[in-house]
Amino acid sequence: MTNNEFDVVIVGGGLVGLSLAAALGGSDLSIAVLEARQPLVDWPADSVDLRVYAITRESQKLFETVGAWPAMLSKAGPFRDMHVWDAGGNGDIHFSSADLGEPYLGHILESRVIEKALLDVIADLPAVQRFCPATVTAFSELEDGQQIELEDGRTLSARLLVGADGKQSKVRDYAGIHARVSDYGQQALVAVVTTERAHAETAWQRFLPTGPLAFLPLADGRSSIVWSVTSDRAERLLELDEADFCTELSKAFDQRLGKVTACGERILFPLQRQYAEHYVAPRIALVGDASHVIHPLAGQGVNLGLKDVRELADTLLEARKQQRDIGSLPVLRRYERARKGDNMIMMLAMDGFKTLFGSPVAPLRWARNFGLNLVDAAQPVKNQIMRAAMGL
Image (cartoon, rainbow, N blue to C red; front, side):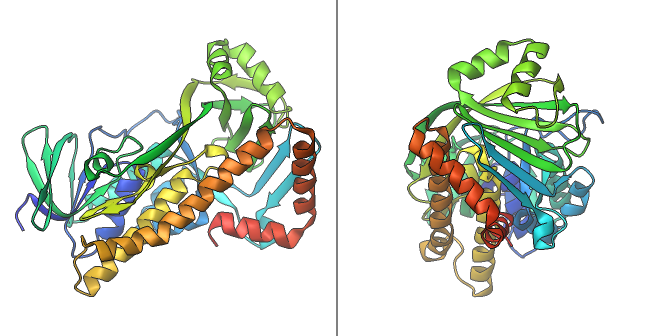
């Protein structure tokens, strides 16, 4: 192959795209990663990325396999417990890693920390070539592959084109794959806050009538908040000065960690539900947000994307081992069958939780509080929930 011919071209060099490149990069497949934005690889020591993720044990295993985990670990905030309670009643449930004999439930990691660790990994992989900044302007079909045209005039070819380019995926649009989109009517307000009491390596979530509020423990002792509220209320919260916002946040959180004493920059993310009707087309595959976007109330979005990565990488490497065409539909449909149902179940579950905990109807309010307390008292059931959430 020439320098512009690859087995796999991945459009999108974020967490999911880089993870796929790292997972495939140790094989004899030639990989190209295209990314339009320059990543942040250096930052002040006391700063925190506003984009953080709750990384499950299953996702951690993927990072360990590709050799990226050691570089992430020093910046990771482990959480060993999780408290969930309902503002509309007395329902309360507590998950603890100690009940499973495990050291932790997962880790909270900044997006930029994950990206930098993955970039360092693929930099040492001769099979992976990264193009950045690289803006894709057009795609076209070849007899046995796909052609990708870049803004700078370069043209690449691939036996398989992978869309890891987010919910506005150009690859998905080019493939003619329809994505069903529905607006939750909410925005997520994200910020880093300081509280009177330590977070105790615990993830906290309170279900409010307007949406869930999560406090995620960071490695430096602060907490990252994700507050999902109606769009109108989100805008009002954004306009408050720091003192007034901290007061509102303390009330909403029921002061579980005492008062919120400081808050950094606040940003909003619109919340939508989105799923692609297909994950594959001839010589095309979608991963991560290009194929599915769910409500963030359980923090599973990026973990689902990393499950896609593991499954697609396993599928392609097995096909390579069997000397099958990695871009053929029979090969790619194995990946689609493995992931589409699992992602849909999680999406429907998150929608169900949102509806159940957002309802002011008295019977539903009673049922959800009763259910939380019932499950909290049923340790075997809790253990199964924890193991499933951790990917064990």
